[in-house]
Length: 465
Image 1 (cartoon, rainbow, N blue to C red):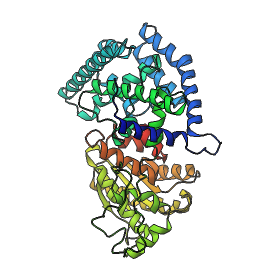
Image 2: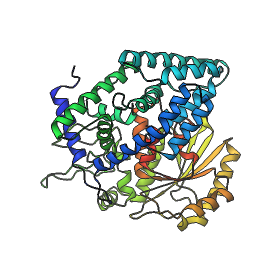
Image 3: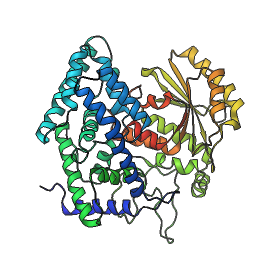
């Protein structure tokens, strides 16, 4: 049975060709070559670590707590599947945390994680485990807790298929959220409410494309390789031109920043795939101080620094924060504030437009001064558990350790995060795609801020994999 029509297959083959023809990286390896090496590493870890661990757990030689801990450790050392994200290890931790009967939890997990013999059994296991997780969540809330601490049933297809592919990667693909989004964007498939059926259709489309890609390219495509095609496409989801080229004879009647309504281009090859609005999609370009945007800002009666602050503030608003611009013309204060009151934390943020990388040491003393003042003032007015300091720029130099350490020692700031502009765009894209699933709390965006350092678009995608 085929799931894709001729038009869908042609579109998929076009994406496959883009993947195979993608240029080499700095080490001279194409994405396909790098991913083949990646897959060899995966199989090595499966054969030497994950498979023996899983067998030991099924046979009762390894306890549930030990199994969970060792799975976490292996995936931290070998970041090959994205399992340490929200739908993997965090989901696993939540299941254990909310389970009153740990023996029952152990039996439910063993039954769900074992390799299915066929698709009907796989479907049944997803449904059975979903019922169990829903029951755990209901019991947790009835005991007086909030839904924020409960495992989300939307994580189940990824969680189970990760363990199934350990046992047979040639049959069971990992249900990556990124792959689902890309398949949806390419109009190959539209998921429904039934998660078990979604996984089976996802699997069958991967199998169909593996056959088609192999026939068309002459390259041996397995399920891992099809996964890489979708990942490669998802790695650059904001390729639709923000400012379509105009005919030279056209009269300019507006600007990039002050048009309320943007007219569609006269010619377009494909319908847009990104969920990201224009005021957000230009963030990476503004952060890099691109000349065309600098000129557009001037024609709009502003400058890139102010435009960057405005767009970032809009971005935090879209994510669901209570926001406020602070910095414009008000002396030594952060550029903005984002509050997540339900989750009891605040983000002070600064925007830095830089053609080259931004160095934290440049503004070290000034930052400490106004963060001390602002955070203390905020805590007098609000009862918050955590306060984070965030800098958004194009990219960052790697000389930030001492500065971050100093800020954390001298102020009330919990962590200092350096967000690349492309990462903020990725966060907004993810939020707009799954507005009811992605929260601001510890099972959502707050998790990004719990470690100091650089946040890239890759780290965002890995967390919400």
